[in-house]
Amino acid sequence: MFEKYLDINPEVSKALKEGKPVVALESTIISHGMPYPKNVETALNVEKVIRDNGAIPATIAILQGRLKVGLTTEEIEYLGKCKEVVKTSRRDIPFIVAKKLDGATTVATTMIIADLAGIKVFATGGIGGVHRGAPETFDISADLQELAHTNVAVVCAGAKSILDIGLTLEYLETQGVPVVGFGTDELPAFYTKKSGFSVDYRVDSAEELAWALKAKWDLGLNGGLVVANPIQAEYEMDYDTITKAINEAVIEAEEKGIKGKESTPFLLSKVKEITGGESLESNIQLVYNNAKVGAQLAVEFSKL
Image (cartoon, rainbow, N blue to C red; front, side, top):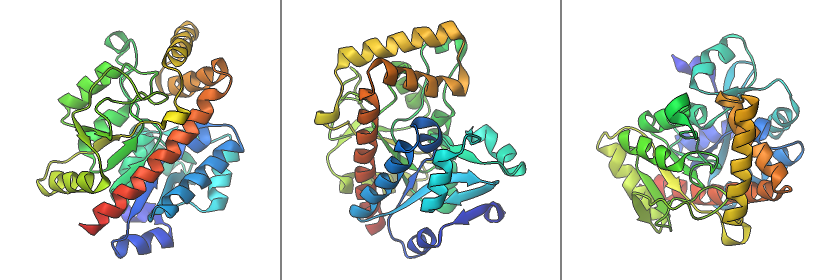
């Protein structure tokens, strides 16, 4: 039934039919994460990193109501320039499709569409999570519920450091979602390697990770897996500097009454402003690093 809403790029479709490695990519980072033309340049570079590491990239979005798996360069350019693209989470999908609108996919939505297409590995920047102050606001990203139900591994630089990382980990534990450190015992906090929180398991190779994924899904243990891949040391931000910037941004968001799906873009933009653009460069580099690990994982998983 869902096939009538889905357009899979011929290159991606061929790779999936032949059992070749494919890595899903989100599109919110293009439309809501960075300014033009940096967003388009970054998106195309991420695709190149995946190809260079032996896999096929599949950037995902909704264009004129169609679920697109594997965007063309022209479609990425369009998303990067267009001002009317809706940031689309699970609840938004039926309305974006019915109204034939353009939607940029969040982590949750990218997981859903990747799963429909049969893609098992997804590389992104950082996952959403439990927002600071959530005991009062109940502001919890739909990404976490999606990770509990949808069989896609998400390679990320941990949870965005604008979140309450401790509560995010507690929520994932309750939902039975494994949080795995790729070459680390500590959950990275997006811009920095350290967060002060441990991961559930550490793996040091893509092959080991692929076997764990296969075992999980072979046993019928539905849901995703968080692959926490730390930012490279040379692009890591100073922990105290970024913490101070985030605290300032959170206070300003509260004062302005910014909440819900508007909060993350606001906070990231504010942090970028406070750090003089340094956080944007870190953001770009960690995405490239996640794309590399995502491709390596997809290659190993395809061998099984």
